[in-house]
Image (cartoon, rainbow, N blue to C red; front, side, top):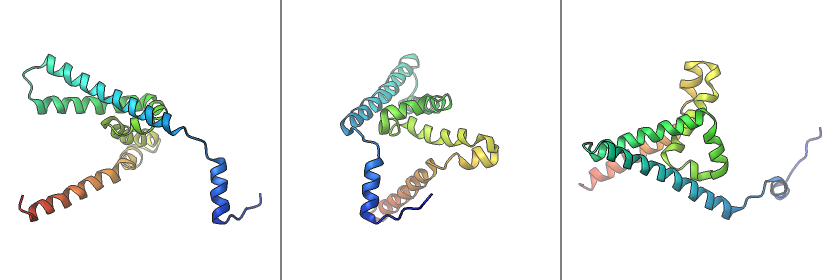
Length: 151
């Protein structure tokens, strides 16, 4: 096979020609609808917990909802359903907490054949790890700023 040399303009044209077309309006609407449905499911879980356990404090109910949503995201990823949701909804499936659970569970499942240490444990945070680190670094910076300004 002969290698083709592309200049920048020719390469952009080549990519433009082979790139699949996207209906941006449809993608935006589906992301909004599916993300909203995920949030509605979370609200329903919250309301059911509040109704069944009225003595629980608000923070406890919120913690239980978070745990249940993470479980659902991981479970749906494990049985292969969350990937279909992601193909259908795009960014609407990755923004809520279930998307974070998916980003941790997917690499763990993908690399489980390499064993517990080298597969699951080392690859689990390949996607989510940089997000966690960025969140921690930003929170430290905000904390230092808050300390300096005397809050």
